[in-house]
Length: 362
Image 1: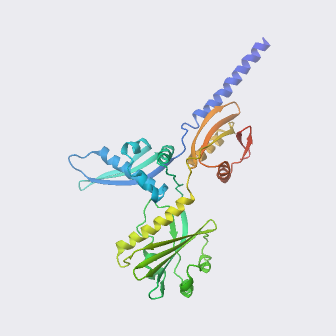
Image 2: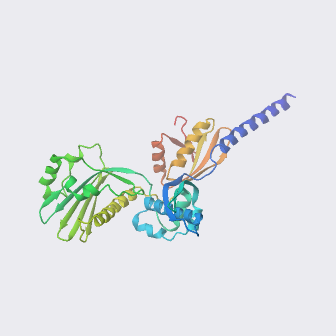
Image 3: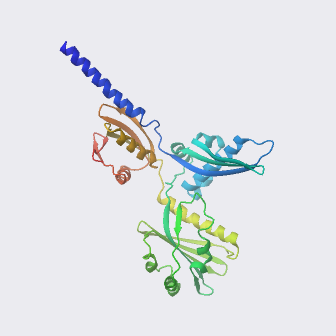
């Protein structure tokens, strides 16, 4: 009798632990996919006519949302490969969408959409086109634009420099870089003027030191008759990156031409930034991670971090027991990179029998 009673109690205990583990799964990761790419406030308008078709307008919004996403995560030279992506392909990658606002004004229909794309499906599409995406990370740079008229041996800065006054106008939503312009300072101008003949080697240290920003872009535009040369010194992660660009004549009295010129220069900076944050989606590191499942809040927090991490391609629970949940994590990078990004989130691991065990103190 005692043996039967003990066996019955053990069965009940086993069922209890299985039940707890199932709760962890059912109320934990429902989908194995990492987070979505959200593109918000897509605005569409069209005349309200007899053949008005709301679904066609929404499809147009999907295309615009997809194009905006590609502009933010793909370098400009690769964007042409995504140009002919069909509406059916685009719709197949949409996780959710919502109509934020719709209205009729003077027989014009206005629609504002929020669209979320499944990140895994987007990465799969890009990989099929041999395109490596970049992390859509926003970044502040101290930006010092200098204009040099070599014919007149004259330098312009601040409000006297048309590029300075117009640079932060007409910004586009998909841009990742935010340019912090220096304040107007006569001493700074005199320093630049003093170094007009060696600006490409001048370090601008006296000016940069006034701002609490290590990363900066020095852009010097040289005008010599009809020729324009742009010298870019992009300082990031304690390294200087130099980019020289040549342009045919730019009419600096024409606002439209100036904006076009600025957009082209910003594209160079954006491509540099994307190159620094490129994801090699062809590298898929498979990790088995074990986490104690006694704390459901801790599990939810861990899964949210995985979901929010752009370098995570996929993750899911592949088994569990009465003590631990075992996750399969597919990571676009090296083991060292995974450890680095997880340390940034205060997670530390030790490897036991090819299982990455989360330190209980994390």
